[in-house]
Image 1 (cartoon, helix red, strand yellow):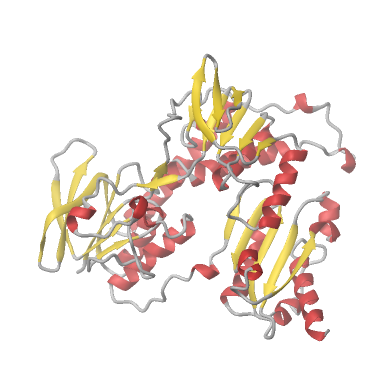
Image 2 (cartoon, rainbow, N blue to C red):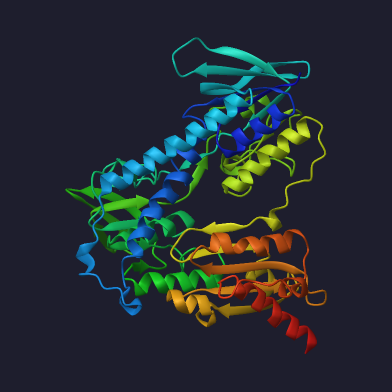
Length: 467
């Protein structure tokens, strides 16, 4: 029986463990926090649960056009302790479900930390495990090791989080009350999501963005559409503004920008990226290649340069998505245990930003097309023309579709809409399965539905073929 040690129990680690157990391997997972890792306990699951609360608040506001009247903004109140309590309960519940699934599959779970050992024995790898309960350190010799340790919020020396006024996104759920004025530093995906959700809850938000628009790495049309929504709803966005320092001043914070301006608020949320958890694993000493920034270097089947040692998830820096981490972990186990496996294909990965409205993408980007890197035709349909969108009062958002110029094969898409994370699925299937706009256009959709705009976009690209 193959013995496998997985260091880290997040999506990459626990999905890999389930695959390996299904293939009759002897699997041990070493995780410091609990099943599901930081993703489930501190990051993705908590943040999306928090966003769900903000969506409930949004549904109570600005409904006069529907004939539904409220007594004003003050009629909706948010109990921070209740929201944060629900966030933590659901995270623990999800972790418990994953724990039960792993135990049922026969996986051995160890709460603690691990690192690569000092030596190897033939074709095995020695992993040194330090249990969290204080028991003595011990070693496990395994044929395969998977590094799946994830990443941690980046901390800047000039803006050290204190857990009270200067916060990482893992610390906000410990606040006893909502901020009076939140300054979000960093306008990438994480910063935009939290800025959006706090704004929806009713907290004044200032978003500090070092670039000329929010979410600079996303589709430009989509990012600018969401930025317009943010501004229309009252968010202050400071573009081309870099934060040099953040300090606590009394019951608030001061953020000093690089041009000398000072922005004040009650709390500051640092959303300036993550760093991989690889420093204490003994990887370099073991001979595993670690690239710039501490990311483990892997190929498309998750192999490192050391035979039998694999890595998956955010510690590799491939693409910081839970879905990608999980697939990297599965691929690693399929490969290690001799199963037929296709290398990771990032072109077919769908990604979503959980702002309001959401932003979902798959396949080629607008930048790829504009630069000539990928030849494609495109169409962009505003949601405002969709019957279901009119009924729901949705004025913002669009569907964008890319296809090959001659064959009409769908190669990418962008959706800006409520629940774009669900609407992107048909386009993802089209990209994955090399469907044409002709096939997509001939698919009968529900009327009225937002998904009808997907087929309408395909029909417009068909018309372009005829022309």
